[in-house]
Image 1 (cartoon, rainbow, N blue to C red):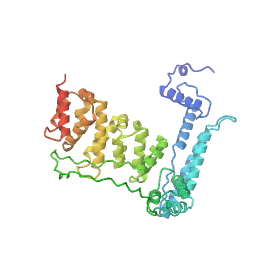
Image 2: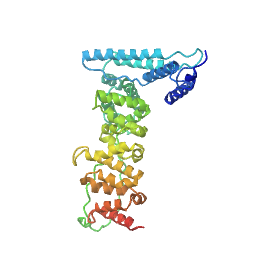
Image 3: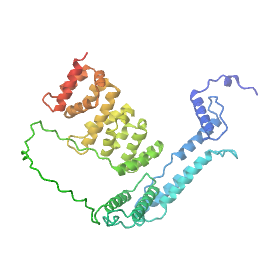
Image 4: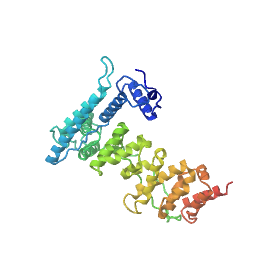
Length: 433
């Protein structure tokens, strides 16, 4: 029968046409089964089936198992049944994924392998096993006493040291396997840290006599003029400095392990962790990891999950703050108004807000007055001085003379030497043509 002329004259639906082209691209890439769709722009049965196949693949690929096992017996049984029902619902998604032709690559195998991995993780979660800390204690064994890895002459006992390091490496691998690198139990982490500290003590001189350097040769004494008593300083007093930020090697190592995971998995872990325990220490580490690797994907509401360590670390990396969205920088700037002076967490929040202000002004120098207005009046002088120390003359010139006048009014000519130096710099920039 001839095709209906009205049907032949229909204008293609552009959204359907874009969907068909996207699905065909996945067929060519080998992640969806064939054959290719006819790109007609009409939502036919073949297009619906291919779209449902894509949704089934995505549902299995993005599925993540909650690693938390409830302590209560009744809650544990209910959680186990819920996990089994969840896995069975994922298996039903396979009915929407057809088998590939024999002798060719089968896209369905990707989802089959993913389901097998989820089933193994589910079996490990609910298998009866001793407590993780007891297993670590047996794996690590007894610690040598302080100085126990030193010989009498001060050299290391290399064989015993290598054995301790091998046991430590085996215990770390066991923790990563049991915890799935996303729910590192706090007790196990503390146990590993204590073992490392014990190894450092065993490498010290606590149990062996330290080697003494040779006595210096006697030198002839000569008369030295008496040292005058120390005079009180005549310069202006130095203002107190906020305590510095110290890197935590253990946390940096765990952060690198999280960075290896894909952004979708970390985002899923972040949502699941926030839903089950908003106070979980993993939550701020996931946010910091996403900022490190995919700063452009960060959402403004995630900034509130950062802890003081993450805020300090991010404040030292202004290039990452330059890559986030303007709304994320606004969320960082808003931290300056959330904590009163002297309250716990104020230094970290102030450091991140100042770094975000610097990144915003460097990207848009004309925004300098608006950025300064975001800070409370009590912090204005400090922020003005820090911005002047970070911004070069070219950025300040582009900010405009009204902004420079406002900054100059915020500095006191009778203040510290740094204030006077920056005030002279502003006067120089204002007088230049």
